[in-house]
Length: 296
Ligand code: NAD
Image 1 (tube, protein in one colour):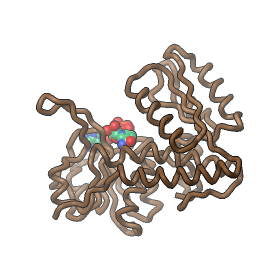
Image 2 (tube, helix red, strand yellow; image 1 turned 60 degrees about the vertical axis):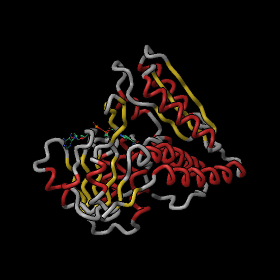
Image 3 (cartoon, protein in one colour; image 1 turned 90 degrees about the horizontal axis):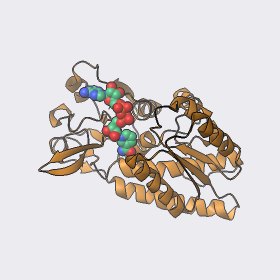
């Protein structure tokens, strides 16, 4: 068997097109969604992420507010900016790029964002609502993974899903989303015993551990949907390369469907950020969402 490759670039482009028409509809109604992106410091990877988020939001027709603050910014100055953004009428979504410099408490900053504008889905209220099955803004990478999985198979009820990784931003929210789809969910982590055996039972296997190529083909159930969230920079044949957590060649001959790295989950993350911003704008302004499956 050779796995169907799940094309995250194409899926993100299609979602982006849908978002552009949704924004057009909202602009006509005089409700242009606005996204504020806050970057503290000059971490090169964070700067690239922020630049891409701003560029994509402008392309989609959103109003973009970009705040770049020096690494020396105090926690209280950052909290004061968030307070202003919470109160700003034309800001529907607020994203503070992580990681923050060590003198700033990221949890305190996340909790200071108005949950209705928390388009990263990291606020405790959104995390709690997700676990209650109540409407919530959901973290972007897990949301992107779910859209890719549902693109392969609509009805996931009764399937066994294994999520490798229990971070607050990927593993745990994704496990909640899979549970909401009536999967039987296992979360595996660095202390899990006999991980190959756990993975072998998965109809849906999500790898989000940040360990290059460590999920091997012989850990995968034939025909499984395999979602590789990992982004690892390695050196191979003297060249820098991006690889996932799954041994791609090994998995390809066993899985039913598989995301590549790059070109799988990654492109969906920014598209889901814009989707969350549109959802947040509609909810805040009390207007119906022009997006299909608005409650996802
Ligand atoms: P994290 O470091 O916060 O969490 C890693 C998790 O993996 C932990 O829960 C840990 O218990 C588990 N783990 C580590 N080693 C393990 C092992 N040997 N066996 C089983 N479990 C193990 O990482 P994160 O922020 O959740 O990110 C995970 C990966 O996903 C990283 O490679 C990251 O770069 C990538 N990522 C990609 C996107 C995207 O847009 N595609 C977004 C976020 C994160």
